[in-house]
Image (cartoon, rainbow, N blue to C red; front, side, top):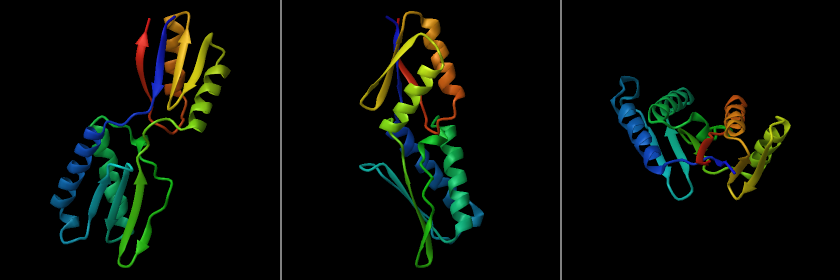
Length: 163
């Protein structure tokens, strides 16, 4: 039976390249000359730590981060920006977790959306991915289209297509 997996994986090397590109661009920008800007990726916990002088500069760094990440082929949804930045002394700090893998509640949303679509497919949660099987490949392609149209707030990839 044809099947494929829905995953949410981040290539660490690509992410590291995007962050290094952001650091290089920020150091070359005129409006950041002489400013305190620290951008670090904790590869163990997958958390991006940003320190800047002001709240406005924090927004500019985030804009550059998202645009450079998208140019590297990363989805902007990998950054969990739900937490607000906070002030620590004279600097503004923000910790941005990088989403890697599908959480259980997100996987349940995906399976519910697939079942509600009325397509003749089976969806099963397997650790941090969702496996979808069907009798026809066309049904699998319809599922991929439905997942792309649905705004789930996470970056999804469709891998391991078998027919």
